[in-house]
Amino acid sequence: MYFSSKLNKFKKTRHYFFTRNNGFSTGVYKSLNCGKGSSDKKKNISKNLEFVSSKMKVDKKNLILMNQTHGNKVIIIDKKNKHIRKFKSDAIITKLKGLALGVLTADCVPIILYDKKNDIIGCVHAGWKGCIKNIIEHTINKFRTISKNSDIFACVGPCIGSESYEVDKKFLEIFLNNSKKNSLFFKSKGNKKLLFDIRGFVNNELLEKGVNDIDNIDMDTFEDPGNFFSYRRSRKLKESDYGRCISTICLKT
Image 1 (cartoon, rainbow, N blue to C red):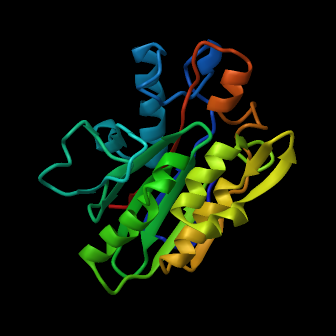
Image 2: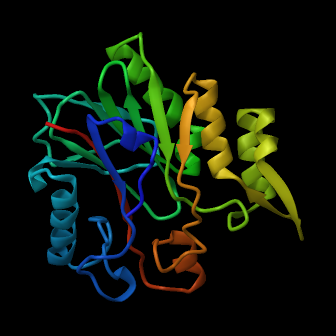
């Protein structure tokens, strides 16, 4: 498990960026696969989520996950909807204590957010499709609908590194059509290929939306098979499927 030393200073929250270790799954899912969308055995995923819940010191029913769609939908978790088992969105936020919010990733960017003034927490799943659809802007705006006077801290977790994220020119064009400034996050690799810095893109989006207090767990999920699942690595190795790591945050009771 990894954590932000800066976020740990805020005593009202608890958070972890879990690795793939210390779980119950086997094979390509070894061992802490938390992805219900994978083809892993359900009982193993359930045990893994129980482990995560225990580390977060919440009941398993209070570990809130999303059915992530690579979109820009943000849901506020409150007393009325907190018992829904899974939310179809790519970001969730809450003011409720004792709920652990979770985001699942395997190369995409997990972002944990904490509004220090208003005790609001959130987590974001930021893949390239969500980035193009402005998932970060939508999430920050949702925080500010709860309280305009916000002071948001962000921690950007382990994700695929820029040296591992090879893309083509069509991919670049998608980002340039969104904004010409996005060229800053690409560099040429030769042979008509480019490298995309999704971590840099995410950090820039946060800054542009007024989030100035940012920490990074700067680890490359593709290059670290001992600690992280990776969609792109699994495709390269022609594996049948891949696991998902989980990142979580809660407000302490």
